[in-house]
Length: 88
Image (cartoon, rainbow, N blue to C red; front, side, top):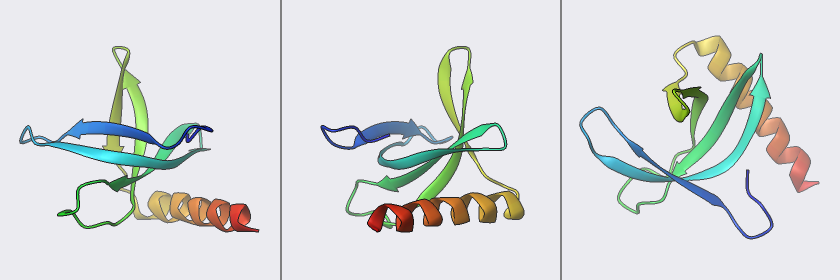
């Protein structure tokens, strides 16, 4: 999702109303769904890559945690393959 001018950033709000800014590292399509690889921008948060399934509800983007372990593993593998392909 990054364009020639730099990375994309999104702000999400958790169920407790706390907002977090995340950098969109990349996105991909898998089994008819869009997945995003995100990393927190705040220094006090764990700088771990997070994977979410993206959807739209009432015209608004919504992110969902990937609960299914097989789905998460498959998407993670695709992200890693994509990352290593770009490095070559």
